[in-house]
Each structure stands twice: as structure tokens, then as C-alpha cells.
Length: 604
Image (cartoon, rainbow, N blue to C red; front, side, top):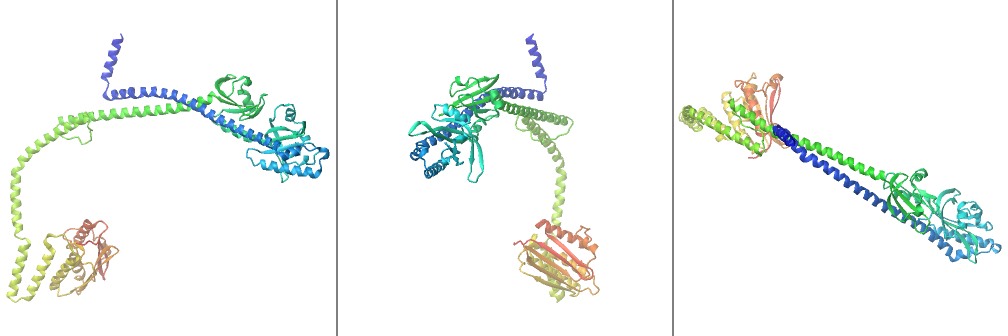
């Protein structure tokens, strides 16, 4: 039964389109391993996050405990320094009955100087000395206070009943500044009884070296910030909370019971009132305090959850990309196959066309190349048959072209020059000087026009061409045309040949010859200005109307030489030098016309 099911499934897969097969293969080869990788990565990441969180918490916790111990030890050391100071010891041994006022003032002044010097320690907030009321400096109100002000404080009774050298307890300071303002601060005080050095059974006062509780809170708060809801609190041997980073209500929810029986300096997973947590303990050196750190398991799980969500998002994106790539790849492959099939069907209908699209270099690409080779071979055979049928017609065409070239050779430039030269000698022979001069000018004109087939000539050659042309026209019009040249240092630059002569011809035929007296002046000026060669042809003919000026550059029929010539010259200039160069016309009816040629400076 199972074998039959496998055969049916295999047959179904074989019958699938190639596109669907490729998508299916891509899916199983990429998506399934991706799911497995994501799961393993999440488990590994969760373990690493837990280890790193606990490690960072331990480091911060140990550093906070060390900093707090350092502050307490600093305060205790300063307390010892005061008690052991030789001059302070003499002060503490004074007898009240024989304690004269000048001496009391002197002693209080020394103690204040000593306290101010020791307050330069950054760990210490305040030093307070409480002395019997019988001393006159008991009411100093700055650093020395009366014993009566602390007799009702609970910590004072604890100090009297304590056998320890010092007592560490939270207290409240009432400090009178030099400005007269009274400052009240919550402090952690290192307290000790000041004994009479002459009789240790007598208490001469109480010494308090104070640390700001806010400084203590800052220390443990930095250590607690490793996690979102983690907390640290400090309690003494009686279970009294000294300082904490959370509210008392939150501390009571998480406070570890039977703390005194727990192992010292230990980190472990435990359950606190039904909630999982990682708890660490540390005894503050030199005190009866213990610092406790509580990291709820939910904090670690939330970090792992964020990592899990990131991994799931990455997996979804990668799965989507994998599916899109599989789909695009399969569509690309099958699309090329369908395109090849379509081309082959067109061949069956007699339409021969190669595949121009890129097919790649895979097996499908090789099929496309073979198809193109076959089509090109067929087209080549057809072309060869067609060319064979055209050979006779091509032979007749070549014969006709040969006859045309033979005819053209009879009227080449050499033939024209030789004929003009013969006419010139005949004019000399018969002493016809006018005909001789005209023939010489005409010969020069055509020599300058042809210039051995050159398309680009010097401006100097163009000027000579124009001068020859005007000479010939003056034979015709009885020297009625005057040519004025004003060219500056540009004769060696190049210009397309036969550029100036058609424009001068327009000035003569359509400008000056249209005047009543048929005489006038043509001025040709030229200069190099701002990186451009500017050539100007100006006449004093009849000028043009605005509508005629507007149509100058329109290509008209060849019969209308004026517009046709201007259009061709303008187009030639743009073709040689660029669209920004060419001709520009200005004209005033009845006064004359001016055409400006703009070309770049090109040296031949």
C-alpha cells in the first residue's frame, strides 16, 4: 500500500511543469534547513544571552560591592585618624571643670581645621562631632553639635549597646552652612563613641563620618541597570533595609527569606515566592551588611524573546527571498523555452528570424545558439540563390556606370582649365584685352572653387575667391560694386570652402542690383573675439522685410537660390563645427543687410 502511494506521488511530481518542479526543489533545499538553523540558533543565543547577562551582572555587582566597601573603609579610616590624632586626643582628655573658655575655643578651632582638611576626601560628605553641653563649642552648629540633639535617636541607643568598634547606620544630617542655610541630607554614618583617653569608662562624645546615601544608591543603581527589572538592595544583620534600587513594596515581593543561613558570595537560580530568579549575595567588607542582587528569569527570557523574534523575522525574510528567487529562476528558464518553441513554430509558417535576446550559456542558451546558426545558414542559402539571379542585371549596371565615368572624365577640371587657357591665348592673339582679363579672372575663380577637392580652406583663400568673383561681376555691372575688406589676424584660420561667395552673391543680386542706381558697397570684416571667429558681410542694398528675414534659413526650392544657399551654408557650418555655430541675419528695409558668421578658431 505504501509503495503504491510512493509511485503515485512520484508520477505526480514527474507530471509537474518544470517551473513548479524548480520551485519545489528550491523550497525543500532552502526553507527546511533554514527552519532547523533558526531553531538551533535561537537555543544557542538564549544560552549565550543568559550566560552573558549573569556574567555582566556579577561583574557590576562585584564592582558595586567593592566601591561601597571602599567608601565605608575610607570613612572608617578617617574616623580612626581623628581618634588617633595626638592633638585631638589631648582635646578629648580635657576636664570640663578646669576647661577654660580660651582653651575650648582654641581646641574647637583645631578640630574644625582638622575636619575641613579631612573633608577633601571625595568619598566623605560630612564629619560631625557630638560633645557634652558643658563645652562652649557644643553649639557650633556646623561640624560640632550638642549631645542632647541625638539622645532620642535610635541609632544612639544602638551605639551605646554595641560592642563593635564602629556602628554603620543611616542617619539624617542637619548641617548649618556658612551662609546660614540649614541643609538636611540622608547619610550613611560610620559612628563611634569618643572615649576619654585618661579614663576609657567615660564617653566624651560621638564621632560621625558621613557618606551620602544618594552616592550609595548611585553605586548599586548602576549595577542593577544590567537588566530591565533587576534590583539590588542592602540589608544589615537584623534584616533592616539600608538602601535599595526599588520600592520597599517590590523588595518585599522578592526578598529572599532566611538570608542569614544562605552561603556567602554565591549566585544561584532559585524560586522566590513562586517566581524564578537568579540571586547573588555579597557581604560588604568591614560591615554587618549584605548586598543582594535579584535578576528575574523573565528579564533574561525577554532578551531571548527579542533575539527569537529577530531570528524569526530573518527566517521569514530569507524564506520569502528564497521563494522569490526560486520563482524568478524557474520562470526565467521556462520562459526561454517557451520563446524558443514560439520561434520554431514561426519557422514552420515560413518566417525566418533569429533570436536576438540573450539566452545565457546554459543548455537552453546552447539550443538558442544552434537555432540561430540553422536560421542564418538557411538565410545564407536563400541569399546565394538570389545573388545568382541578380548577376546579369549587375553586369548591365556596371557597364552603364563605366559609360557615365567616361563622360565625366571629358569635363574634369583639367579639361575646363585647358579650354579657358585656349580662349585666353586666342584673346591675346587678336589683342582683346578685356576678354583676356575676364578669362583670367574666370579661370582663377574656378581654380579657387575646386581647390583640388578640399572641403576646408583658409580664410585667406576664401577672401581671394570673393575678390575674383567681384571682379567678374564688375565686368558685368560696369564696376558698380565696391568691395571693402577689414580682416584682422585671422587669415590663417580655416573655414568650409565656398562659404563667403554665395553670401556676397546674395548681397549683389538681391540687395545692390535691386537699387535704382544698381551700385553699392560690400564690406567684409573679421576678427577673433572671446574665443570665436566673427566674419561679417554687410551691404547697403535695399534690405529685407521682416517676413523675408524670418524665412532666410528655411530650405526652399533650388530655384530660389537666395534661401537655398543660405540654408545650405548654415547647415554645413553646424555640421563641421557644432550646433552653436552658423549664420545670423539682421536687415533694415531700404538701408541694407548684415550677415554674421560664427565659427571656432581652427588652424590648418
